[in-house]
Image 1 (cartoon, rainbow, N blue to C red):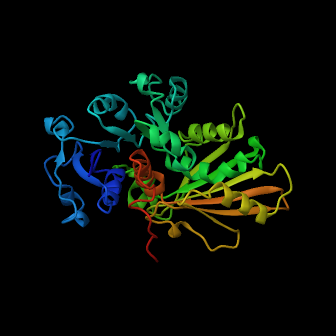
Image 2 (cartoon, rainbow, N blue to C red; image 1 turned 120 degrees about the vertical axis):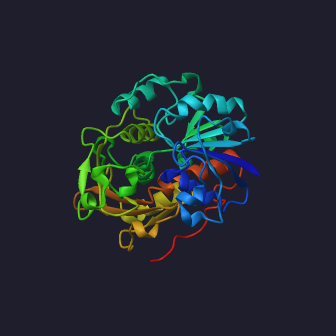
Amino acid sequence: MIRVKIVGALGYGGVGITELLLRHPEFELAVLVDREDVGNSISSVYPHLKGFCDLPIIAPDDPAVNDSEIDVVLYSTPDGVGMTLAEADLKRGAKIIDYSGDFRFTSEEAYADYATRIGRNPVHASPDLLGRNAYGLAELHRDEIRNAEIVGNPGCFACSCILGLAPAVGNSLVEPLSIICDCKTGVSGAGKKASPAFHYPARYEQMNAYKLAGHQHICEVERELALLSNEEEIRVTFTTQVVPVCRGILSTLYGTLTTPVTEKQVLEMYADFYNDSPFVRIFGSTAAMGTANVRCTNYCNLTVSVDERTNRLRVVSHIDNLMKGQAGSALQNMNLMFNLPETTGMDRPGMYP
């Protein structure tokens, strides 16, 4: 069995990957690390896991953290944690998947641009590891992920937007400077934290835009689209909003068409682009679609529409922010890193209703 250590095991990302790994035929949970509830079992914090996973929570500074032989370490941690710990885990022979922005960029310059946007120190703590990492959006970077020691999981909004726009940008279907990303997320996107802004009374019947001055995931979206289009750079209008649901992201993506095209032609183009991507599903504009159709799954559902009146392409991207936007992508990447079919442990529908 492939042995897994999770650092930050009690956050949404940690418990999400725990739930997935319990169903996986090849991976085995070995060590759970967190600063909270040390000594208690994870099932005492999350009772739904009782009898399925009763491993104890170990403190980060406990020597037992490194006693076990580990094949892969998942950092379900904020920015700045993985970059300080990854080198030691690599020397012990483990591969790394990081949920934060620490390893989403393969150069010091790209990381500095991202870090500056979020108000962090632009100097990476482990610059020698940059270039040994891959960006963890499997649909676009399978080969790099298979050969990487370190994978930086994509941001949830970035995953939603890049998957929705990649075929259009890659086929020069839209004008690069016309792209608009209008994105809505559930409250769980803020993570498991105590904040007055995310208490139930503050969120009930409340919707609001945030980070209008610049969201951290813009860096990923613009970089990946520029790579697909061969443009030196792309700039998108990016608006994020939080809505009063638990989980899910709905991103409505717009771009001005470079040439007249029918919806049927665009559907064929998208289907061809994602022909080998089992977790991306393409639908026409008349499909009854919403975030509930991807809830608790690793799927991205894309609804494609051509507005002939305004000469615009419109794509509505639906993902579960805690799955395809986080733990699901992590497991998809783990499968690739260990030469397993990327659907292993995740090839299942959601639950209805």
